[in-house]
Image (cartoon, rainbow, N blue to C red; front, side, top):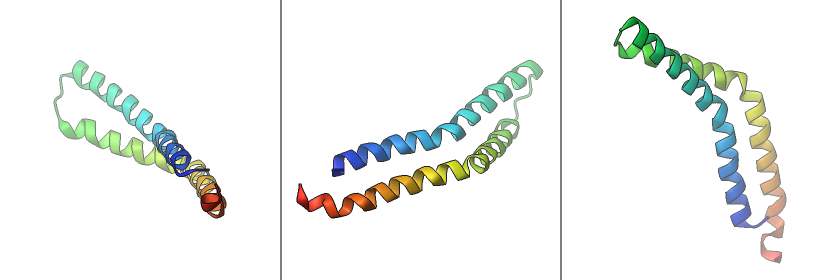
Length: 87
């Protein structure tokens, strides 16, 4: 694994790991926006609080999966360290 391979895998991992929280916040934001439009309520806390709670729940539910992915990447990088100068 070269440094550029590790960097591209890291960027891909960041995108994959952020997807559950971002998708959840997107859906909750869309639903609260529809709710605010229908009820004509324009309160910022009505849109912010559910997004924060949804992001926290998504992160809590996917924490074990995320940590497994991060540990697998870290393990692959550590295994490639001795091979860095031999190419």
